[in-house]
Image 1 (cartoon, one colour):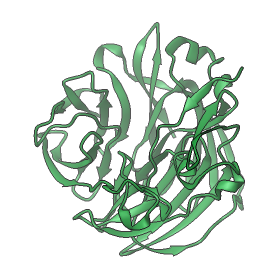
Image 2 (tube, helix red, strand yellow):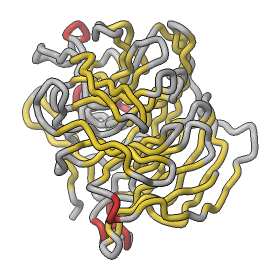
Image 3 (cartoon, rainbow, N blue to C red):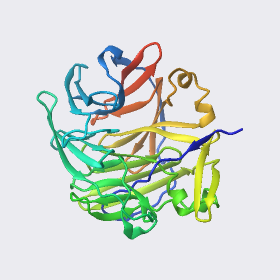
Image 4 (tube, helix red, strand yellow):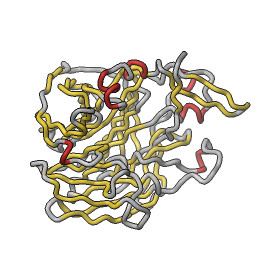
Length: 370
């Protein structure tokens, strides 16, 4: 009997006035395959409950789960804790839950979204002197029950990114497109990237059921000129290059969501469930100014659950990192010596940090030289 995995993710949308191009995966240069050996950067005694990593020019920012009082810890290049901030709470300078941090190279600031309130938080300061939290924008929610109505607005999740021109890429949950670009006031500028044809996935899908299949990671480069969206249960990647007020993008579709269980709950309501035979693809995503690093799974749900690392931690992991250039061409495959749950590349592409876990060692951060 197949196990079912309920799809509860909402969909994303990204920014700007767009020059559109679609692409099939092609490799005009040889792909390098490299074996990387790690050194331990931090161990369990130095960490709280880490969930995601972001590398800055001077250190490493770590997002903790909402089990901790402070959601962000910042460490310098030696692994010394320099700042712990963003109190968990519902106050104006607090947050209930964030999933990742964006590093903004221009002013050395950090940016995150409180997914509980759809509020974007800017954190200005430095590793040396600490950070000041300021809420800058609360994104508008769709107030229309008919989410398929393009005019009804955007459904946002905590997948977002801030661009060099001040606009923001967010996830979109209407048939207008997978990604949306909004301005600094939260007003919609443009939706981009059509959803894949539902009939190529399953002919029983409705538009809304099709939308719910695509849960993205959105990352923006430190300089704000390069962005990528990659998806968990579909091998779909969108590479965006930003030039002033325009975005040129390439979309690569290698695999659609597979082996779905479709349940019709009424004449107009269809739900889709992943099964034990459904594949997972993106575990995490990190960007430098020139490359995208995808922590890649490429396994079925039942295969993931048979891995020793999953039996030990009950969390999905990977030891494969695919490196793409800004146009979306695969350039390198990095084989890590450990299975990890999250990654962060430094802005200069010199080092890759990775979050690992085991029942014996607890949480740890590894460092790889690239």
